[in-house]
Length: 226
Image 1 (cartoon, one colour):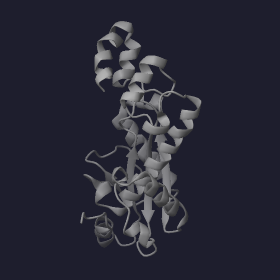
Image 2 (cartoon, one colour):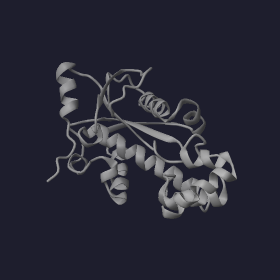
Image 3 (spheres, helix red, strand yellow):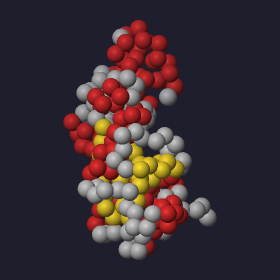
Image 4 (spheres, helix red, strand yellow):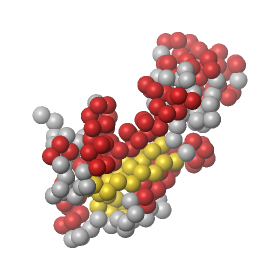
């Protein structure tokens, strides 16, 4: 049976710094062609966390949609989690690049907690700069730390819900299903319908579309084969 995230990293911090406030931080939406990048920060009460979360939370990519929604609801209402959410908009992704925009969203998520965090456990191997607290990076942290897994779920559900809302205003791109990721459906829609204000103009096919008809013709065979 696969090993689920636990409180190993959080306990290590508390052993080193008694009374520390430890937040797990993760993002969702680095790869899509459209929409913001969203981050979440989560401080979990290890003693009060419901059993369903303690035994079910995992990297959001491994959790089915229905379960993600269930876990999100519990996290937001159980009283054992303090949650902060931040995001970086499309214009910030374009001006900063996606890595720094994701770090900006993470910083905003930690600041949204409304408390002085001692250490942020951040998913990945890149340490965000200008953070409001000490940072410890954990590769594949959303599969190792319960706090990061919780942040992963909140960030993913928050972003998906936002893209579903945008899908009503911009029909035809399939955002209600692909939430902005570069699926064949989404890529074909860009060529057919053009770009929206929510497309990231520095990303792949979006940049090709801006380059004009000749560039589009070159990429059509790739779109056709998916």
